[in-house]
Length: 368
Ligand SMILES: *Cc1c(COP(=O)(O)O)cnc(C)c1O
Image (cartoon, rainbow, N blue to C red):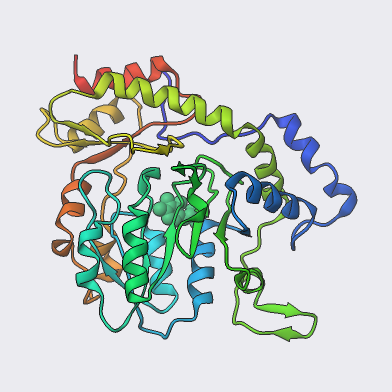
């Protein structure tokens, strides 16, 4: 039996990629917003149906780019959730702000909108919710709270590429959204990421902040870093975007097989499909709550069979060693997130995962 990894990157054919990068040997323009970069940006603005896309070398620096670009006073508080990848919390802290952890709801594990307002203080400037697993947050409720308290909403949409809610692309919620195009994501540019937004005044800022803050030949307005997407990354994105629809269809088939096998099994909890949401089938999280085996037992049993699942997300970011001395840290403040983090496993999922693979995985989980 062959090994099944938790994910496997989507790639175009070798020939298609070579054809795409061929002209780089003539132009000798490898990075700094070249032709491929410009094309991918236009392709993505169209695909995501969003006014502006600013491409970055990875999703994390895209999130830092928008957070630093907002130029909130140092020490400002940003409300976010701990049930996410390290990147979300780190980007807030590395930008000089204080993460205030809000719990998640126990249905789709996005931010619990009923708990946001009690965390708002006179230092709160923004909310950074996460569309975790591609589940779209309660964007209407978040908008209403943000409007009432004059807060900016910046979504970590790393998981939500291609997701559409009631006809609106995930790229259009809040003031801005960050996407990741990492190799493990539904759409990849090897490493890569972007900020999507509607405010025209952000275009120059976000483009400059990724290029040392350089605004013109003799003008440097921001203390920017280096986070430019290069031409080889952009070329991979151009190719992968051509095949994305088919890849998502294949993921959907795998997810449907998982649902068929695992829904209704006592002690196994699966996220319900969100109403009005066209999913990208990015992840398949399963929560073992009162099941005959614990999450860690299932994880170990799969590993014995050369099947790699992932404890995603465990540990919570508010229990990271690096935040030990943070006054806002501590998992006791986010009991639902803590409960889920101890019981969740994301099962292998990628476009080429076959129905037989899914059956093999489910047989082991069910233990027949
Ligand atoms: C992948 C991911 C990121 C970071 O993106 P990179 O492109 O890997 O830098 C941020 N947040 C979440 C939730 C992610 O899954």
